[in-house]
Every structure is written in structure tokens, then in C-alpha cells.
Amino acid sequence: MLKQIAQDFFCQKFPGFRFYGALTANAQHERFARWLLGGLLRGDRTSLAEAITLIESSNPAKQLKAQKLLNLVLENENEKVAREGPKAFSFRIGISGPPGAGKSTFLEAIGMHLLGKGHKVGCLTVDPSSRITGGSLLGDKTRMPNLSKDHRAFIRPSPTCGILGGVTRTTSDSINLVEAAGFDVVFVETVGSGQNEYVVADMTDIFVVIISPGAGDELQAMKRGIMELSHVVIVNKSDGDLIPAARRTQGEYISALKFMTPENTHWKPKVIRVSSVTGEGIPECWDLFQKFRETAISSDEFVKRRSAQSTMRMWRFIEEHLQSSFKSNSTIQAMRRGIEEAVSSGRITSSAGALLLIDAFREDPCR
Image (cartoon, rainbow, N blue to C red; front, side, top):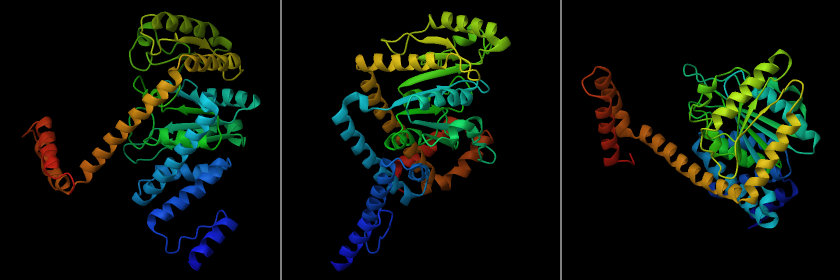
């Protein structure tokens, strides 16, 4: 009893004091999560960085702490929405596009514009991981020198670690943590390696595609996938000698989008030109984003989209967990090399090898 009183006294007297003593593992995780949540709610950037590192960890004990923290963050968000309504939601903006289109430079320009309007800006950028070494450059902050120095902004680069779709395994959870820390506008920039980097559309409120002048002809623009999910297409680098090319590209994409079914029945995709260097078109771009948000909220699409995204994230987590359980299963590990050799030598087909492993996993999924 006295020991518990002493523990409570130190935790109240020194909020950052972590005295676990004889507490159960569950109680330790709960206390740590509440301590970290306190830092997030105070807007402490160090606590935010530590929280994102925690949820990115593959360590089982840290994953338990991460789930405790995420549950507390969700409770806090639900209470806030119950008090304030839809206006309590932050604005999540997904940014994608081919390499070299100027995505990071655009984030720097619009981020500084938003800071000037009193917003707090969070940027989650994703870099591709090497299939050979597993490493990533994580150099997006170097293209956002002014934004990265401002205390009202938070930039976090993360590696894909082999996850497809242009985002990381924990991007959606990182968004929730950034919002809990008080950042009301959250950008998510994908790796931007092609027409299939659109998973970010399933975790943001608006999906924006950034292209360069002359980056592709009308036929290229008509490719399904990333383009048909876009709400706004931005032709970047519309300055100097590139202005005529930017105007042509804008016209081509306006024409191409007419043949696509809009993702949102209440919104027709828009194509605009901006210059991230001169700042021309940046204020109008933000006004267009705001107009989309207002339209989505008034039509109830905003809340419906968030709800649908939560369900999709649940199924995506199930898929990832099942794949991890499959690969770590002792029976699968024992059979794997033999099956792989049989497939690579041509003795059995790839599908036959897959079915052998699946059947073995079904017989004993808990090993």
C-alpha cells in the first residue's frame, strides 16, 4: 500500500517520471501510454517523434504500448468531435505524383502559406526503401528548409520498408498522432513512383496529384488508377519558360478527366497551375482545398469517407498480420526452402507450391 502511494506521489510530482516497480506489464504499458499522450496533448514535438517511433517498431512489447497509446488517442478524438462536431476534424491531404514533379517543394510553399494563416502543419513524407540494403535516404526535409525550422510545423520522413502503395505500414496511425499533437492540417506525401501509388487516397480527406509541365500526353493522363481517384490535379513549375507547356498540360488533363467517373459524386476534379518557386497559384490552391472540404462536410461525404477508411484500415491490418503469422509459422519455415527449390527448378508450378504451403498453414496455424 505504501509502495503504491509512493509511486503515485512521484508520478504526480514529476509527470515524466517512469516508476514501474512491481506493476504488471499491462499497467506499465497503460501508464507509459498516458504519459506519452500527455506530451502529445501539450503539443510537445519530442513526444510526437517518440510516439511515431513507438508505433513503427516491430518489437512485440512496444507494439502493445503503441496499441494502448492509439486507443487513448482515439478516445480523446471521439470526445473532441462529440463536443465540437465536424469542425474538430483536421484536414488530411494526400499528395502523390511522379518523381521530379516538385512534391516536396510544393509542400514547402503551401506549408509556409498555411503557417502565415495561423495553421499548424504536419507533413508525413515517405521514401522508398532499397530492396538490396533495406535503407532509405529520408531526404525530403532538405527540400523544405524553411518549413522544417518552424516550430509550428512537424516533418517526419519514414521508409516504406517494402510496403506497396506509396505509404508505410503505420502511416494512418501516424496521422492520428500528429492530429493529437494539435496539427490541424496534415499532408501525406507518397514515394511517387508511378500510377499505382494511391493507397494514400484511402487515408486522407482529399487526394492531390502533382505533375510537371509536359510530363505526359493526354493518353498517359487517361490511365486509370491514380488519376481517377484524384480530387485536384496540380500542374507545378508553371513559371518562366515553362508557362506555355504548363498551360498545354493543364488543358490536356482537363480534357482527359472528362472521360473518367469522379470519385466523389459531389465534386468534379479540378486542374490548376502553380509555381512553388514564385508562390503563384498557392493561395488559390489552398482556397480550392478548402472549398472541397466544405463541400464534403455539407454533403456528409467527409464523415462517411472517414468511417469507410477506418474499416479499410482494419482489413489491411488483418492482411498484414496474417502474412506475418504465415511467414513466422514453424511448419512453413520448415517447408519453405524445399518448396522454393521445387518451384525454381520447375518440378511444380508456383500456384501448386503456394497451395502446399497454404494447406500446411491451415492444418496448424498456431505453430
